[in-house]
Image (cartoon, rainbow, N blue to C red; front, top):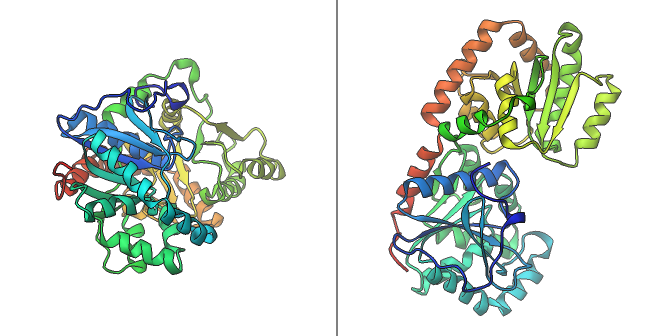
Length: 414
């Protein structure tokens, strides 16, 4: 994890107890939850905050939009300034009309709260991650001349699916919001293409997720020897226990190659999820007990220790944005077999850097794994080429420089 304490241990303070260093202005990153779990959107936000802190010129601030926070709460989380407050917005889906009606009744107070936040922290950039129509408030403040900074929306995958499902008035409001932002940022071209199908004139900028070589090395080296993944060689998968991660496909493919490689295990490392029980039942049904190991809610430094020891990294997701786990495997020189979905082909862009198979095709995955496991030279070559590509093209510093260039379009003081 990045330096600092988790939100669960943070000391929360009431309105007025945290002073803002306004010498350079604030880059505010808004989220609908606290970024305490490792992976996905949270990892993007925390790493962007670290790059902002290290390179400037802004000061990072995480804004957690939390319905339970009746008043502004200020605290430190993961080493970063964090503000938490209730802010009303229309909800997506079947409850939209009712929530939109309530939003219109409380519109002045929502707008006022946003305006106070912008003044309090000298906000120059508002960047909504996993954004909702909440960002309409910031767009309206700009129209009223009460905020003159930048407004950016960042989409990661599932959030784009929510937008694409919008209908009626909800769809109209999303189109209005897209017209009033400086840029809509996506982590892969695949997500950008989907959003353009919703709104063809959308201003889309692709800023790919990345890694920080220095921080990853420090995390990896911090793992004590007694936390070693073990002595037996293994195929590794990393991902929350969710159906969309395709771990069931991997288990079925492994079942067919397991007799050929009796010294080899399958290790699945991930956060708790609804598919966990089903996956464990599948292992039992295929009589793979002792050959498939599950590790749940593992700290990130220990995840890196697993990655470093893996013989092959298998990532058969059914849906993805631009997965950081694949980038971390590449950084450590581990050969990758992954599904051809989302932004994965933007990382593994040729047969020289990895192997892609179709999603939900356990037979194709089986063949790819068997081929790699039998060819140590190919594994070494794929790992080396992917490592070179990741270090050259996918770093958080590079991502932040792209964000910064976009932000300078309109980052004057409010």
